[in-house]
Image 1 (cartoon, each protein chain N blue to C red):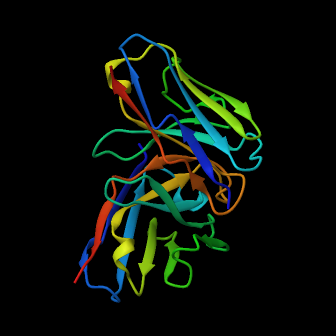
Image 2: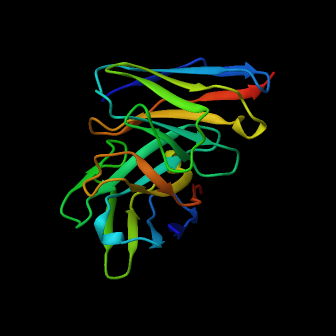
Length: 121
Length: 107
């Protein structure tokens, strides 16, 4: 069965960095586009970034552009989110999600359980 | 960016009744519209994609309709497990955007 397991969350000071990981299993990871979506406490869902199946294309939300970098290692079946220059408003649960297509052009059919990131001094 | 607006914010429904949730896009998204269900402490779950296609394992009481800018999610007969928050999302344009959610609560 499809499984997505995020890790790497925690408490970090403003301005610092954090890297999230999402370990995938139960499907051919290299055949799917992958996303990061976040949810601030008590708020709705915010799309963060997408990476194509082969890593050739990436898109970001304006709120994280130039600070966050999405990447993937298809040999390790793992998705990453490098988060730099963190701000208090980045505090959220971060979910990885699988796209139904290779190029992130469809809905998100499987989600991980999420990892909490708290940015606070 | 495309703004997705859901209404109502909260819907109070009795078990067994019908629930109708609306989602409006600020510009056409064709049929590139998905609905997700989220329960407290859980990740979202895909219900509907392509505006009207049920995802794998989703009961037939869930149905989606619409195209362009106006979309509807209907739950024909609410079960206890359906009380949750529902989000619409467009995937026609970048950035992908979600509605603010509709909470379906027990009346």
